[in-house]
Length: 213
Image (cartoon, rainbow, N blue to C red; front, side):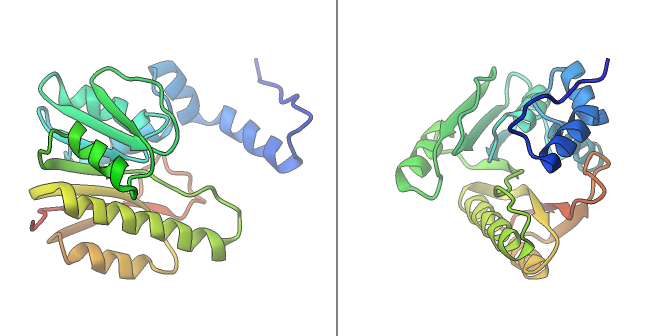
């Protein structure tokens, strides 16, 4: 049975988005498979190609809520691996995931993340962060690139030599410069556009490996 949108507070465009979201193949698949978001399938597709996550690794997930990427990583890592996740938003608990809520730009939050990691270097940093989109690209693109720069800075601070970095980026102003910034630290850089990404979206995922330390 089709889901009806009856919330009178929703605008016309919001109703269209909601219908599209509820009818989305990956949304329905996530409900069936027990994942918290359709984004889980983006990471699964990238993992199939690049094998970034391996059992026993230490993984840091930036912008983790609601936890779809944590679920994928945790299932691959197994009992010997660990996921430390952080977000400014709250996230419901997941088995074998240590969650730190707060803005990692703040020293107290950063220190809490380091403590959760046991002050150990990380094998992989993953980041699916995005700003709240206004629909104005002149505003949204700089906000998005700023988050990407924060993620790269964090990765450089916590990764072990030869570690890897996966980050969502929106193509547009600042994209090529950001790629060059990554290449200063990682000798191998690939761009991925998973099938689970909506075709109209400008998002791509940059896979950087071989961190120079």
